[in-house]
Length: 616
Image (cartoon, rainbow, N blue to C red; front, top):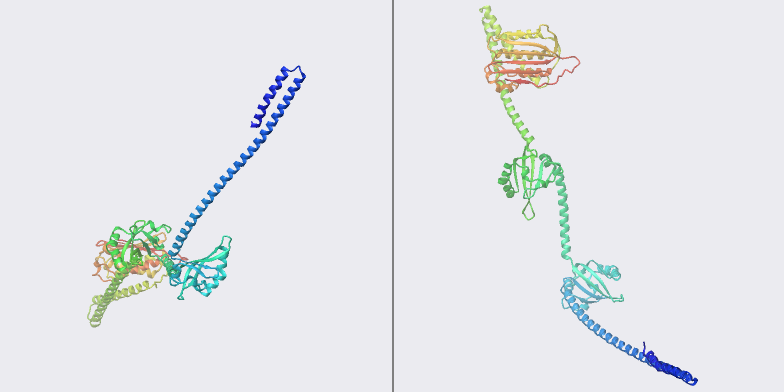
């Protein structure tokens, strides 16, 4: 409630009291009533006047107070504004001081940097250049910066590029960067990487041009060296590709390992030779995985030291296959060195020597056989010469006796000399026939003409001829089939088979010891067996009885060529048959021949069968 209302209520209270008192005490008199009402009205007027006066005075006081408050607020604002201005001035002063310090530091940094930094006006006049820029362009340190123009520090073609390309880009984007050439005071062109700047006002108006450049001569030289190195590397890679293609194509074992022996590369030949999967990682294996302990010991003692000293080591060792068996190899071990000369890798190239050793052994055996064959041929020539001279001497001696003393010799002596001549001629004929037969057999000209033949009759005939030719040395007993059947065989070859077998049996048997000849028919085969009780064949010579010209030592004192059994074997093979010999030294020999009976319509060349030799 305001003061005006308080004054109103306070002033009305006496008025209403006077009006109440008059009305109560003077109610009967009209004059007093009128007076009461006049007092009331007067009191109300005075109260209203006082109320109005108080209201007006209060409003004026309020306005004064508001005006004073506004003045106080404005004074406070002025004080705050003044403080803010003072603060801003202080801050601006600090910022300016800081900026000046930063500018000094920035300038110190620019002066200390190795990059060339310069600033120029828009028309190309230099207004600042640090010492690095002066050193780069070979200017003296104390030169007047303003005397240097931008056009002087670039070759003509670069100036054209800057004006036509670089500056428009810098005006548009604020900067441009790239590689250009600068021109030193000495005329030398210097390759640099440059950043061109356009320094603008806050309103975007270009003010100055700036440039930061770095000498890249060393970098360009390094790039040249790098290009040369890359070219060498490319050539090396091409060589590596060719090397890998060669190593992958070869069947030799090729590997590269680190100095600890861990495999880094295994070619296809190495994986195949060692029994490894083609896709296995080489780094899963070490050198020791392929070398037995004794080979690793040889490497440690001799291989590695020699390779370190001489660059390589060669030797013949063995390679251990994955399944454990060992493969003979010829190995060349290498030490691969870094450009500094330090050992970097171990490498080897190895070749499987299995086939070579087999061939070498075969060659040795062949040479031994050839030497033996030459020896046998020499012995054969000597023997043939002896075999021919002996019957010729007998023939000559008997013929001279008969020519000189025919009329004085009794008939039995004449017959004896004639028999000696006949036997000598027979021996010579057999010898010549054996040599010719062997020659035809070895040259592949042994004819095979099967025809029907009565085998029993042939056996009887040959037994009789052999007995006569051998002067009835041993009886020949025949065990022939009771019902003989015709067979189709080559009679000439069969004659050589039986004649040689019978002659050997009689020749190597003691005089008077019977020789058994047995003939049997078994299905489609003919079985011929000749058995004697002679000197036999030593067990050690059992595998050489079919070697041409070879004769067992226990038969050296008995005339012979060493071709009989060879001819028999060739004739049996020409029939497609088999021959089996059972013999024991001092207990005799049994020769069994199985011949397939030729059937018309089949090929005349039978499959060659293996010879079975038993020497119990």
